[in-house]
Length: 497
Image (cartoon, rainbow, N blue to C red; front, side):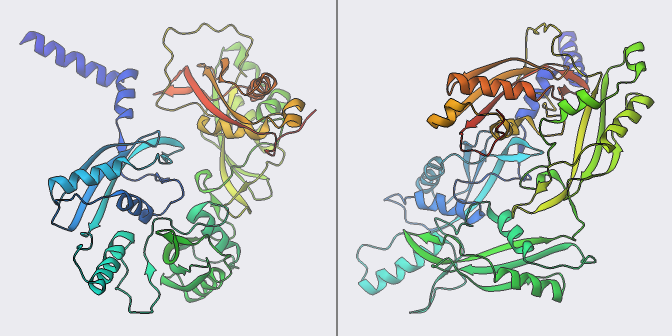
């Protein structure tokens, strides 16, 4: 009895104390049902593409005699792999096994993301299953049966089309693709780019649908839920200006596909969140930390009182790159806050954020300024255990998640002349520790491209300066980070000599 009570008290203490190991385990087990960026299969971002992929791989067992609706559930984990598949509504043991086998053949997904972090996401997918055509059917019966089965497998239309009528699918094995990629976000941005809206436009959502024909042309556009007659008409006119899509395909043949989507309507003065834009706003080279080193006047009280902390500031980067509306979000001391605000207000123009159509847009931005500035020359005493996860992972000073660091370095590193001349390409993997002060420690290449390429990557990483450290609760903690860096001299990048 006493031992049981003692175990309960110890468990409660661990939970209340927020043990990092316990929190990490709890967080890693969290499975979402909806996130900001849902997982998607390569080449298919629509929900129908996932059903089509499962149904394409599904094979009816030889002894199966039933058809109908089944429901399968599975999780796409942080690496994009499918796991924990189960049939929650089945038809028969053999059919259920065939469904799980089909799900097991799905390729790796692009994983889901929440707040910039890769997360596990659960899917529940209904499947309408129909028996294959009987071998003994007459030709006419077989053709009719085949058409109906194809309609069920490839995506239900409102009706089975009459002879000579063009079939319009709801989803197919290969859904129509926007030229250049980008999915619905790129299509929506292209529509809005061609919509002239007055400043007093009400913000809201317009639901539309159109048909992508076998030629890739858009036709039969209509509003399924509108915002106002003027806005609806402007959206339909913009849809009519869309370029040709890569058409949808079923059984290797281009077909007509109905394409529903929503378009978010924004006023010209709308300010976007960073997660809503295609490319983030960023501080112009040589970078934010270099600017802080040259222009930050650390108040004397920081040294005399041995203060240490981070002043956070939110502001808006306008489409012109100008900084407006700075607001403090975290505090160190009065003179510290005043100095950081002065510094932010004196920032030169940033490189503006851009939407999926490539247009510059206003975006909310955040920076964290360390006081005093971290000194990378201070010796590093490596802790015995450095985790790869924290409740809040490290980020760049401008709020860029560390997961996006690979793409950023690819665009900013100075490519060696040898790599340019010989067109050396590849992917480098680099690991490093972000210590509790945000300083990058012990960087090393775990996958090399070439000797001079590797050095260029390490130089680019060093030039970033310190990061915002990871946190477990309110406590800064060291975190080991690994990133992949696409290395190609043809990538638009800084080309300093």
